[in-house]
Length: 58
Image 1: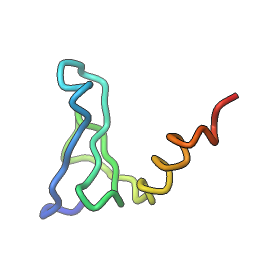
Image 2 (image 1 turned 90 degrees about the vertical axis):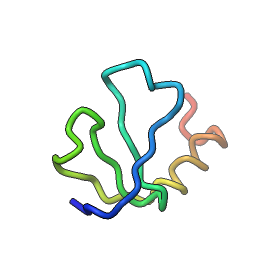
Image 3 (image 1 turned 180 degrees about the vertical axis):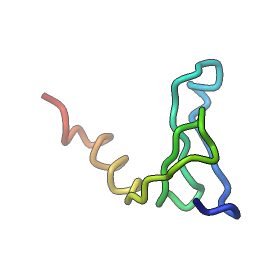
Image 4 (image 1 turned 45 degrees about the vertical axis):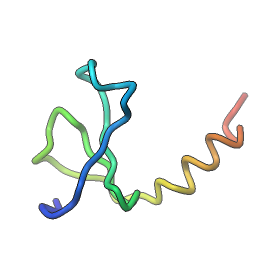
């Protein structure tokens, strides 16, 4: 895990126990309940763009 990363989570999930956090560089994801646990390296920005464009709509 990268100790010097800045993590953010959605303002919509502030009052829930089940959410994920993403780095401000949008390249790493973690479980907000386990901030010292494992992280997932991912290209989050392209994923968010694809979701917003409706690419995964069924």
